[in-house]
Length: 257
Length: 320
Image (cartoon, rainbow over all chains, first blue to last red):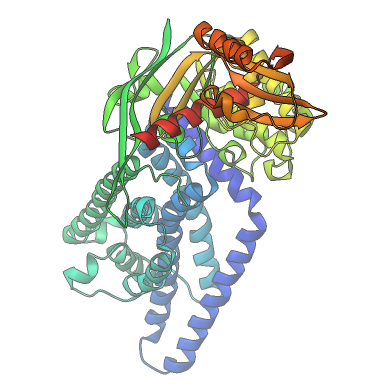
């Protein structure tokens, strides 16, 4: 029964991706144009600086990790907001299968689509800008899958809040741009910066892309931070979502937009 | 057997600005038996939607119990919701960027029921939607969208189907077609339907029992035919041959309504449910010595009954 729920949610994600194909294409074009602007702008400003090549590689990785972050967290939060606006949210809630599981299935489906979409784009962007990024499939998937959990946790928190406080789109937009800071800036040894969602995954991804690091090359401390941060955000996401879900069911505001 | 049982349901809300507590649903109880079409009626703000959403597990009530096929919606949510499917906001319950067949497959899937395309097409065929099966929902007419939403609910194959305003926004032809369809669902598929609507034609034509709510309370829960009989038995149209100076005030205690005078004939309607009242009325006619042209039992439609019952509770609540 749960397998059916899981598969049908993944299937819906694929259908919507196909149906919004032209939207997706224009989204890709915007992403690339925006990327080239940042890339060539920075290159023009700091091109003569020693080791600037490393910075450029870092920017490529950071940019696409940011993209992964926003598509993941927005996928969850906008997903809930849109469904509430359309009127389908209550229909999904009225299913005998708990909404959390429906959400989980959708997240996994969207995640697979996002990975299939963002990773090739990242290597394409590097190729067209004349950079070569290190590539290790296992490390890449490991970092993306674990790292993105924190983004999904953030998405669940926002989605939950949206069930009660309906006007949060400006906050989502603020977070979209604000999150550039913690995915693109090198956190160094600051625990605080590394504990930002996806910051640690971005940091490790840069190590992989720039220096060819693989899973085994990272310190245990790095792995602990990666897992710990993701677990905390995901856990908080579930708790916050459940809290607001319960509040919405008490107030009867699941579909009120 | 009671398929759905609501007992002492209470739900209060606090108004955001004033902090005033509103009792949206005030201790209502009713039961729905297998195979019936049960209509839950009431003016806007009566508490119908809150009741319906509580039945679907979308609102947590303050107190009371709701059991579907013996399972408590709050305590055994999954088991209870397996037996009910709902069309809550008509065409808004569908994914507009998906086709009817995809909607059926998806909504069955999220309930854990695997639906093959062939089966989904068969259901759409029953609804006369086979030709539209692969068209996006937003390209369909309102009536077709509404039918698709009902087809989705029916595809879940639950014992109870809950329909909130199924004819809202439909033109006359589509509404008539939908009524036939709902009757067929009950007759051929043995389903039980809980209906919430303002469409009194729909109620009159298809409901077996009706419950009317006002101000969160249940004011009546009765077989529709019984209500119709009761009201049609007591409503009379009186025609009196009289001069124009005749004063209707003389019949004030019988609450005459819809008066009209033409060609020396005065007519009005009165409700004379009890025999005592009927004979009293005849006595009054006699004492005035007016010539009676006719006394006819009125044909009452359900809309009149509904209005009368709601007005009565409004008057009572004004008095208290």
